[in-house]
Amino acid sequence: MIDAKERFEQYRAMVEYWLAGRFTPAEDGADGLREAMIYSLIPGGKRVRPVLCLEFARICGGEPEDVVPVACGLELLHSYSLIHDDLPCMDDDDERRGKPSSHVKFGAGTAVLAGDCLQAEAFAAVCDAPISESARFRCCRILSGAAGIGGICGGQYMDLDDTDITAEGLTATDLCKTAALIAAACAMGAAAVGAAEETVAAARDFGAALGMAFQCRDDLLDGDGFCALLGPEKCQQMTESYTQDAYALLDKFEDTEFLRTLTEKLAGRES
Amino acid sequence: MIDAKERFEQYRAMVEYWLAGRFTPAEDGADGLREAMIYSLIPGGKRVRPVLCLEFARICGGEPEDVVPVACGLELLHSYSLIHDDLPCMDDDDERRGKPSSHVKFGAGTAVLAGDCLQAEAFAAVCDAPISESARFRCCRILSGAAGIGGICGGQYMDLDDTDITAEGLTATDLCKTAALIAAACAMGAAAVGAAEETVAAARDFGAALGMAFQCRDDLLDGDGFCALLGPEKCQQMTESYTQDAYALLDKFEDTEFLRTLTEKLAGRES
Image (tube, rainbow over all chains, first blue to last red; front, side, top):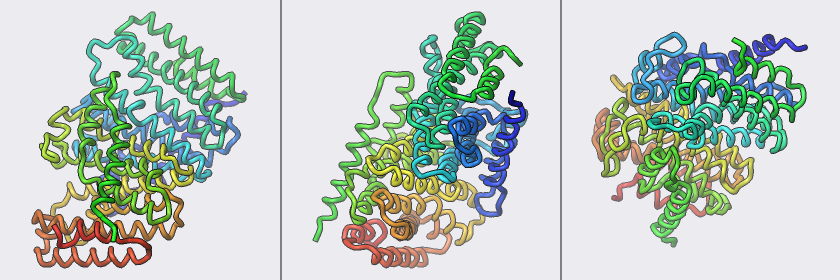
């Protein structure tokens, strides 16, 4: 029996160490931009996406250590999306993780640029990983798909424009806005260590199911999304159904105890 | 003697054709986002960056046809940067290329997302080019460098924060904001067709000199930047000096007539 909490913390520590080394204050003309990027990055959230990436690298037979820059690329992209989502012209949120959001702290211009720059640095991080060129290329391709119109940008757009939303429309929104990047995290972990395309696809499918389960559970806790649209009972059923899908998709992999525990934690009844 | 105008138009037509095929209106939840992206992309500007990329692919011994998606990735990135630069929280420009800027037409939220999405789609375009995985990887790496803190994001930040700017600070700003992407265009053309690292570096150096010459000439025409800071005579000298650097750097390549004509057009006394 593995200690899932300990492994999670090990992965997190690898991520924190890499991010802190990569993004250090410097005295140059762009120091204020760097400061804004660091403000949103460190400390961040739970680092779920990088952790998923590192674990998929491990169960696909690779060394998580080599994949840390790829995993951090996912966190950089996630961090950019949160900064832009919080902008006054988007969701207009003044707080994020218990502190003033980026535009409140630095002004909207710097917040837009900090997000823009984090997206670029996400790709740069993936390009700098100590893995084969082919693996880096595959990871860049997956990341660009999750970032674009079929991923978080398309999802955020649909979320902004959600009057008269249907269950079908909400599913499309969540698939792009939430599930695409979690799916990419799992797929990139597999691709980074040279897994076959069908293995990468299976990792992606697991991540998509986990992402949807996570979103439905979040809706249930917050009383919005599917919970507001269909009621808490139906929303709970959806959470369970996506969670079961996620578990079933893990049957294609070996050594999945950690991922099962993480799925339970993120989408299950616990906590 | 080549017909430079004809070759320029051939390259441009390849770029327009690819962009029009890649970005078509579609009926889905993100159709409004796609519309905003297309609005800024088509018709665009002169397509100088893709043209430079395609010509470097040619003089480095490759087929420009295969490099069109890479070249278009540069245009997508450029287009995103213009949308975000125009935002009220940045340069606050209401017009771009003779029509309302993106945020005036679609609102700031959609404009931010259209820019975000164009950046992601820039990397996706590079990843889809019909060239080797290694070449696509090298192009992604160059593009991410030009997009990040050492490129257009850092440059735009320095440009926003330009009180008490010195000539040194302005050079740093222009190197990031203008020259980095033009340098990347040349370097990516070479890298896309498998050129050696030193050839890619020479292409990049030419692009950086051309980008600086272009910026100084622009300052001279608009009376700002170096012209405002150092006076028109000094600004003219700088334009000529960077232009001479650019010509000298072309001596490392063969078959450079088109690039010399283009340099004259973009930075020289003509037009």
